[in-house]
Image (cartoon, rainbow, N blue to C red; front, side, top):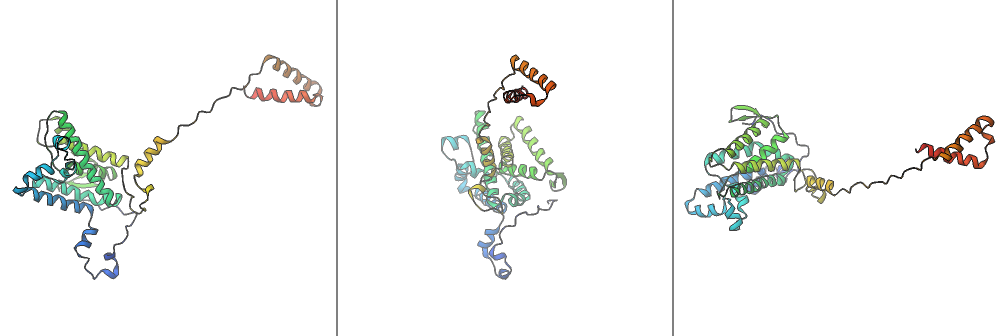
Length: 305
């Protein structure tokens, strides 16, 4: 379904034990396969599991309390975790399918660029910004509408992918080839129109919040962990944040006071003219040591006028 090839890895990850030649005949087991599975695929599995739990009638009340986000739930009942768990919930099958399709399309590329943990951070960060935007927007309109869905987190991922690969072609709706930047623009415009239009049951403000969060993640380089190929040192974490803080903390340039050079007064000018006429008549050797010193000092003052 995707019309591009993954980008070439610049930093090859360390080969897992079960990927080495002498281990090829051994079954790595379920734990081994899970360990090397892409984070995007693990997120898909997590979303599917949560969707299945929503289908169990005996859990409906529990899921509504802990897997939907609302202003009252977060700020009145203290269910802060719903800012994240709502990003794993879906209302219907197609809601789940399309979010997981986009996550599958763009997740592997970004995981190769950012690394496994930073990609997970991007997903959770997108879900958080989406949830905060939705509850703030709804509260501003004096309504308290619970929301659920991975769309905000997925919007963050789509926007970041579009910023990295704007001209890559994908098959929109599985048969219309469009560049990725156009797909991202189409989704953003759709949410803007939905935000100002009549209510349609979609948390458009949350989607836009997730998209803006993705822009910030890319522009300010909000990676928490070291990128692929670098050791996990303090200097390797928060590279973008460190760069911005460095600019903010850089000391302001010290102003160097300008010392005004002494001006050449009229008496000095007259004496210089007299000495120059003397040199013209009798030569440089006619000047005394004091006259030579005076002429040298006066010439420096002339230069600095």
